[in-house]
Length: 71
Image 1 (tube, rainbow, N blue to C red):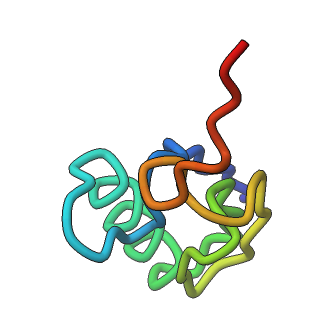
Image 2 (image 1 turned 180 degrees about the vertical axis):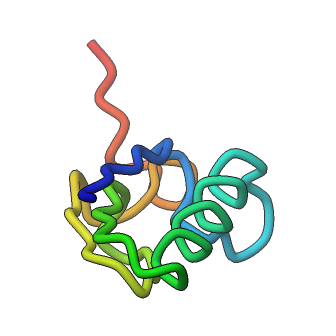
């Protein structure tokens, strides 16, 4: 079974400090990988996972304010 996990991009997954939703996604992803599932994590490029990582941005926008685009 192939599973896609979507993580918020405010912080990396798992977060270094704060990031409650990123923590939940990380725990679920690592649990599924440990049970033999093919898991792809869609998160920031600096995220850590035992599954496959597909980066949607380099860093979280809360950790790198230059990512936020104001008009």
